Image 1 (cartoon, rainbow, N blue to C red):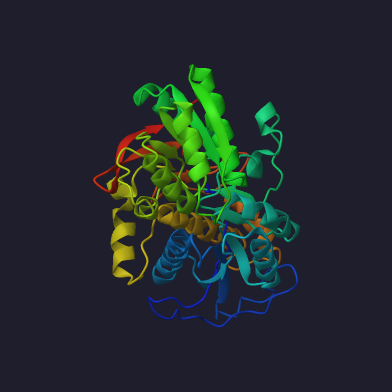
Image 2 (image 1 turned 90 degrees about the vertical axis):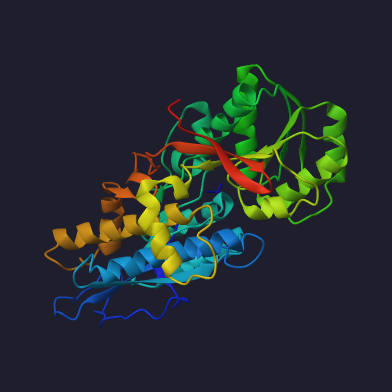
Length: 412
């Protein structure tokens, strides 16, 4: 999604205040010009996410998980002489706000990396700002392929637009095809009605799904669009009902997706609605007054709760006193933050134990070489800055809860 990038910036959170050491002065390149006095330096990781509004459940999980990574690094003295902190900024899932936040983070010379944002459309407005300042961003949730592979990726022309952009989330190319294959082969659905919310994430995901579904031999019996933040989708629901579709694919987020599922079922069309990671949230279920057992969603990675590599993350998060759950992108956010921390560590080690004057550029370079065992599995990036981890899971609503029904590594 999210679309499925963040700096190391965050205000003091509910877990308590961070202890900061004295900070060396910085030059205009985002590096420290004097940190050899033994006092140590503060490195900020910026976080940009929707911290308020309809997607705040996901945004708060992102922020808290990066905070946990920072606190863990400080506790373990992961980078001797460096104290990490975060500065979290709220984009409300609005591209213009994300761009303003990117400018603010760039202006803070202590920021050496950013985690976020959640939404691909927001990231489109942030990438150029970060690139102009050699400031790396790592998104735990962006899934639009163009962000890393260029606008012509669908034509087989791959060109990385910005060397500062990375992500720990798999792209919609992977997710859309995986969803189509499950719906056609595993669920046995042959006639799908496709709806999207006209946004970068939703429309792109729906297009990839549709192409793969038709390639497999399925039929797209109709298409329609809904508008974000509207609540009456009865006309779309009526079109679905009259089309004879045996399933619906929705490219969008859970606020609209849950209401769409509800209104489709109220027409008497008792067919499953499937979507991407944008609808994989308990709020999708609660938004529907009608029982929506059987609805489906894909999400990046395997269920965090079932990963042996995530046990410590879950335990530490629960012990951290965060009032909001880590949600769908918690593990990927922690790994994104930890990737920045490891890049900073590599840069400091290569420079005799201190930050160089061109720290931002060096951190960006080091990120491309990062490789470690993270919460979500092996964390590393390919030549486009995309994650090398292509694991996905299909979830189904059963008894009013999301239950994982199939996990696999996508190799196509």
